[in-house]
Length: 239
View 1 (cartoon, rainbow, N blue to C red):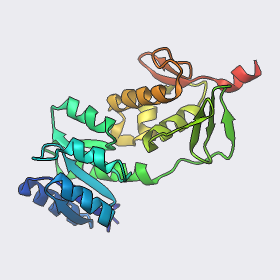
View 2 (cartoon, one colour):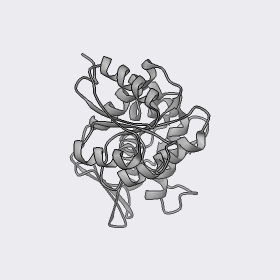
View 3 (cartoon, helix red, strand yellow):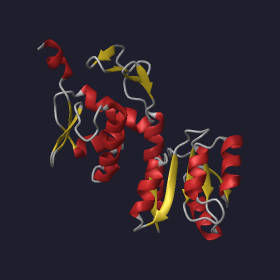
């Protein structure tokens, strides 16, 4: 059975040909597809119909995809894949920074479209196992995985789902180097094992939220050319 069966997918694109292409391919997988040709309708559809995933084109007249995504994130955490031109790396990074879960570069095949949507849905709805203990990293940082809470100087820090999963895998292997491939596979999925720019971007986000000085990190350490390692806090605490 297809992982997309009965999933409601909102396609947002002002190009009718593109909408029809995606609709046909997604309906072949058993998905239900609705469409919007502009940002305002996309926001309304998301509010009213609560789709399982949104495919959002960046280049639209009036309210573009970036503005639409920004407003959508004010009220919904629905998985969003942005549709960009193949060579527009700036668009991809900006989209991820605004809260997109992934991107697909146009033109794309049926196989790539379905594979990316499946991966995003798996990540979004699969929670990592939850240890039932509060981890005291040091006087400044503590993590309560049971409540999905990260506290810095006693204040709760909001993490996006992907940031939370990345921190989870780093902390669970504290003291040990996690290679780029390992982290990409665990956090994003096997399809992403060579997409190292995702990892760099989200490591930066995490450091900005938990490190006292993100440019001189104390918790998330870089092992150049290999991967990342979370500080061995247990050994530090007992030393």
